[in-house]
Length: 128
Ligand SMILES: Nc1nc2c([nH]c(=O)n2[C@H]2C[C@H](O)[C@@H](COP(=O)(O)OP(=O)(O)OP(=O)(O)O)O2)c(=O)[nH]1
Image 1 (cartoon, rainbow, N blue to C red):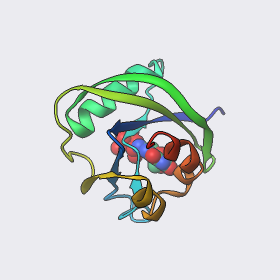
Image 2: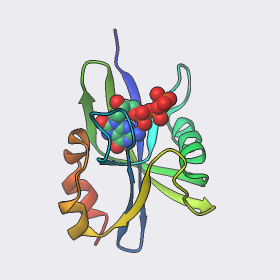
Image 3: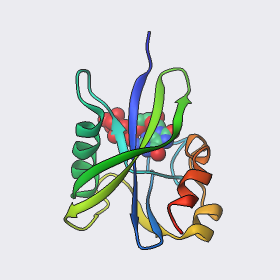
Image 4: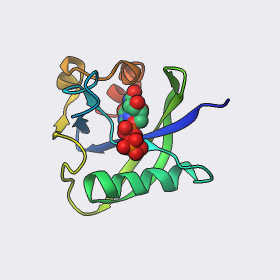
């Protein structure tokens, strides 16, 4: 069976990247991630990411280039990151317990999900 794609957004403003803190499941609670979620069957990944950003953050976004390589997560998922820009709205934590804009030093120190750590160099490069 092929892995389901999970899309995630690198949203950068100035020299800061937007992260969300997961409230669930228990093994991921309290750790930080890029906003996003699972692509539905037949859904275009960019469309899925816009939908997730609307649902999770309440923003309208424009999805840009992919960053980093796909990262397998467990046996079920493959995680894929894109640049994204907010075109309308201000992010609100609808699906996360907290949102945070991090600079490069904070990104290095934050407790990111394991899969996302693979992208640290790519994410760092976005922050100038
Ligand atoms: N959104 C997101 N999920 C990630 C990241 N890194 C990572 O390992 N994951 C994992 C956590 C989950 O096992 C899986 C799917 O994420 P999700 O729970 O956000 O998906 P979703 O919003 O569609 O959730 P749901 O419909 O099942 O409630 O991907 C990341 O940076 N962003």
